[in-house]
Image (cartoon, rainbow, N blue to C red):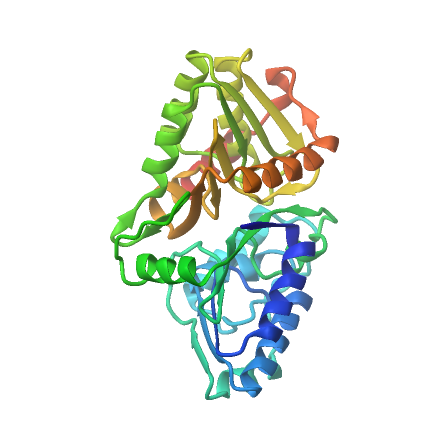
Length: 363
């Protein structure tokens, strides 16, 4: 297993894998914007289709509102609006105005139209799946999964000029890919040494029980890098862990792209509960990575510690004790912490109550 640190490492590797694919490519993606990196991935896929590679893309329409209400505000696959998506886009745009273009008109994309017409291409993009998972499978022997969407802010910087911190994990093993397909698609029981897939994929709802078990069984330390918080179950479990002497070390964003105030509310509550055992660092960059390390067990992937990640969205995480991967993750985290602000008082976690309440309802 190899950790791909941020889009700067992940996208060149993904483009190379697309170019080297001989038979098949399967991509499952949450956000896929009509921007520079979105079109670069599309262009490489189009060239792969021309040389006879069969390409399957599962693109969740649930993310349409995020694509149209944030950043470039251009969705690659979901150009037409419904009345529902239009007002939801307007609401998101005005709730988090930030620095982005005005308007909601979607630009046509001739390359996408050519790509869709290819006989080698199967695209499932019209349904609302509510699936937050992201993965690539190349020739049924290479699996890449994690938290990185296909969008410029994961590759360069966002519209606030912030770099995104995120991960993908690359697993080169025909046997593991075969087991993953059996587990994820066929819902069969599999046994992979030192590795378990943790999914929210009907009928398997595994994220919440797995993450809570890791917190509840921690004896010495819990290390968390996370984009979004909000699950009461995880909050209560972390408080109990702190009470029994477990050190809890959290890295997240000083200002998230969404739900900053609700994040701060939850973090402040946890910090006030046990300041001796809880360490919180707030990064200038956007922390979009998602992992929880409980002693020697790492759970990493797409799932956040909020209610959507626990109960409402499709998710895909890895659970492993692989020492090499854990070392890579912790080294990457240490680099991101260099410019992070260490919380030293509850006043460092100020938040706006009404915004936190609205974000709680949404997330």
